[in-house]
Image 1: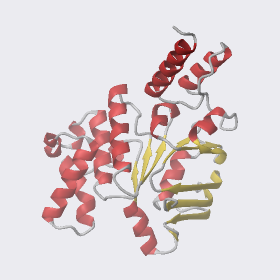
Image 2 (image 1 turned 180 degrees about the vertical axis):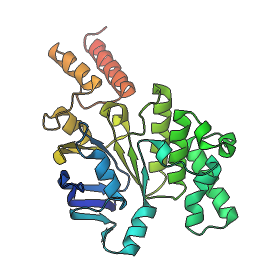
Image 3 (image 1 turned 45 degrees about the vertical axis):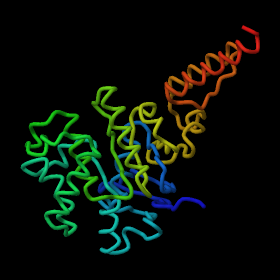
Length: 285
């Protein structure tokens, strides 16, 4: 049985107040359990697209359907979108506004009408999901490091229990270890129910191990969209091949028939070891 379609973009278009087009006829279907990356050069419309998903920006044309309902149909559908589609902005400082981190995370549960006990439970749930130490809850947001601010902003979004999590450059400024830890937490979150992830990524390769599909934008239009390895191997997206793909291509030119659709270092290492082991067995070594 096919997974439920959570979000569907139908000919989505958006123009800035001055009239310049930021998005033009973008189509995309996102199902439960999927992670989609959105990539493209600066000014291609990536952040604009995310802000349309939960109604922060109203499209000039086309529709955004959440579980089949147009999010801009009326106030009820718009409220549903802002609850079910959680948006974490590129700069966490734009989302952290309360005196303490704990109060910031508690904002969404309180706005949803939860009592004190339920709100506290939701804050703890979001804190753990985002990987924040308990001591951080009592601190003012401005005292946090860049990575802590990013996780605190993420916790504030997760506290609303969205079905779709839309993240704008969540790995920006993070060291490799912290970035991997965040991707692991996001994978656990996605696998915890009927949920989907949408990630705007400047570095596609960094987030690729988590992703199923890639939407490549260019000048607000779809350059390519589809399964991640397939799109990265094509030329339509205009993106450089990931390092693992470049490695596979180099090895194939030297006569070793390795797969070209592997994006993660660990998976490639295991694949190469298996190929080398098979070669030794065939040669009787």
